[in-house]
Every structure is written in structure tokens, then in C-alpha cells.
Image 1 (cartoon, helix red, strand yellow):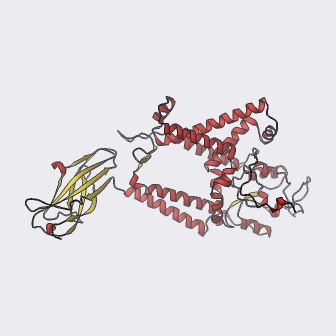
Image 2 (tube, rainbow, N blue to C red):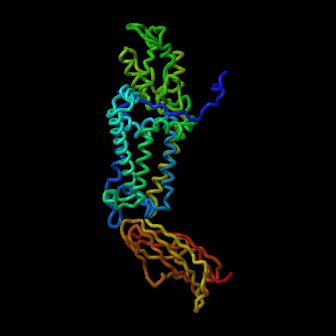
Image 3 (cartoon, rainbow, N blue to C red):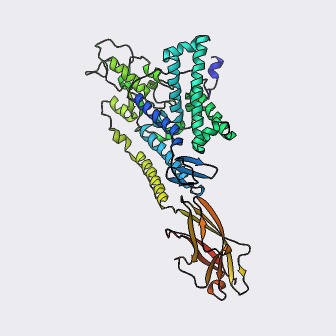
Length: 486
């Protein structure tokens, strides 16, 4: 026995270049549509304008890190409202669980950024170097002027795509027209250039050279998906009962798809499915970690079946349970039976509940935020006439798109006045004016008249509020008044 047979299995295999063949079919058209849609959303969104009024950015989608705000069309998220972002991330995770449970790795095959950009890079490669056979010949031939010219052209186009990708990314964090002008005139912040350089390099490397290696080794989702899928999950699979035994079929020869069935399988072992796979696997070997269920192998196989006069579906989207049922002559279950089952319904219920909760919270949130912090050093001051005064720091955030004027009041939990309690603002002002999308801080004093119940009670719960003088809307917050006696 040789020494090599005793070597442990390797955790990483050196990459072998994969040259996917161009295919035509329903799933390939679907991938083109989704590619155009997702890339269009990514590149165009920062340039959508949205009028927010004076002093605010006119960009529809903007992550304003400088002012710690997130703008999404008519929605404005402040730092203390990060639970909206957390909720969206949870919904995204549950959405992945839902789609994987129902349709396998459909996210990986159609909408994952790695898949979309890799698909785009492969298309550029076809435009420059030709289809599969031409690219294989170019790869195997020694370096010469033609090979160098084609490679440099391809790499230049890849770098341009990477540059556009990095450029579009930074536009989400600043006003896009202004930042573009600063970038071109070399007046932008070094962070912008650094970010673009990193995004350009990673896009160029991941989409051009790493490709399937990212999905196999860097992405954790292929390993997580095993817990999300079961025998009812619809995924790309090979009908082994129909395809085996493989081999050449003569014209007019019956196979297992005919009635009555012949001895041979429908698979002619043409390797069309393997040649079309961007991951370089053979789906006929069963479910594999590398498979992203892009269904290009289905289009390739259906094309071959049409040319040899056999029905489509030798490779198809189906559940493992269906393949076993068809093998013994039973009919497959309907798609709805596979999709609408307890696991997917549970994921959808959780996903929907979180979505409804976020929408309700979004519409019920107050346009003003009020925070009152008692000054604790000292807790109270006894004035010359025997009155007891407490000091508070009032912080008011106006989340409206226009300036507002507010009056400040205090009372019991129902908003009714408390006998002997007087409220005053620092400087003697009767109201406070807060500009749009701004935070205002003000010192407020509550004074209890001498001899009042409030002044003699160690602690009394009070409610402080601000009221919009224009609309009459209120925001309230509870606090504590400290009396003199302990």
C-alpha cells in the first residue's frame, strides 16, 4: 500500500478552472431578468432623488453616518430606533430559512451577490474569449500576443465592473452627485477612495478568480442549509430511475420514458449538464454541497432531451420524496403540498409577524422624542421661602421635517395639574423652539410650594410632557420629584 493512501483527506482542494457552457432555456432567462433587476437596483438606487425639505439630504436611500441617521424614501431611522434595522435583519434571516426550506438554495442560485457578479463576469469572459471550448483552448495554449490581448481586455472589463461596484457602494453613504464630483476632482475624503479600492479589488478577485471557491469555502450557508432542507424541499435533482443505465441511444430505440418502457435510460451521458454547471459538479451524482440550484443543468438537459425526442425533466426541480415515489410508479405530490407544509408555514408566520410588528411600530412611533434626566447633585434645593426645587435636564428631539415650537408641562400620571407644583424653564422662557430633525437640550425646574404634600413626600412620581403648539400633539415621560423630608 502506497504512502499516499494513508494521507488524511484535505480540507481544501486546489482550484481547477471551470468554463461553463452557454445554455438557453427558461431558467437561464429567469437568471438574466434577476441579474438585470438586482444590478439595476444596486447601481441606480443612490441616484434616486427625494425632496425632504431644507437642511436635509435629497437622496431617497442614504446611510448618514455623520449624523447617525438612515433615510429610506419617506422613512427616517434614528440611532435609538435601531430595532427597525435589527427587525429587518431578522426578517432577512427568516426569509432565507423560508425559501431554503421550500426551494432549496434558490437565494444562492439567483440573487446572491456572489452569484450575480460571477454570472456577469462569466458573460464578459464569453464576450471576449468565446464560449466553453474556445476558452478551454485559450487556457491550454502557451502565452502569445493574442492570449495576452484577450486576457488584458477581459481583466480591464472586470476591473471596470469592480470600480463601478465600489463606486456605487460609497454613494449610499453620502449625497451621490456631490460625492461623484468630489471623487472626479480628487477632493473626496481618503476613506471614500480606500473603500472604492477595497470593493474594486474584492469584486475583481471574487468574481473573476475565486468564484465557486467563495461558495464552497468562504460562505457558511452551504453548511447551514442542511438543517433547513428535508425530503419535501424542492431542489434540483436527477431522476436516476429514468436516466440509468446511461449510454448511446439509437434512433427509434425505446427507453424508460417510453410506453412500454425500454431497458435503457434516457441519459445519453453527453455531459451537457456538467459543462453548463458554474460550480463544475455532476448533478447525476446526487445532492452536493457545491450545488447552488441555479438550474442551468435543467436547461442544458432539457435541450438535449428535445433533440433526441424524449420528454423534458430528466433533471428537474423536485423533492427527494418525489423521486422515490416515481421510482415505484407513484405520482409526485403537487408543488403546493411541498411548499405549504408545517415548517414553511411556521417560518412564514414568524416572518410575517415581525413584518407586521415593524409596520405597526413605524406608524405608531411619535414624531418627537422626550427624555428627562433628574439632576442628582443635589437632589433638591430649599429656596429662601421654603419651596423645594428639583432640576432636570430635558432633551427633546424633533423628528419632523419642519421647525416646531413646544410648551413644557408637568402633572400626575393622567396629565392633571398637581397642587403646589410649578414648572419653569431656564432663562424664564415660556416655550422652546426646535428646528427640523434636531435635538434640543434645556434645563427645567419643578418647584413645590412650602408646606405642600409634594414638598413633604420623599419621592413623588410625576409626568412631564411637551406639547406641539401647532398640532397639540404630546410626548410624555415619567420622572420623580424629591421632597425635603426623608
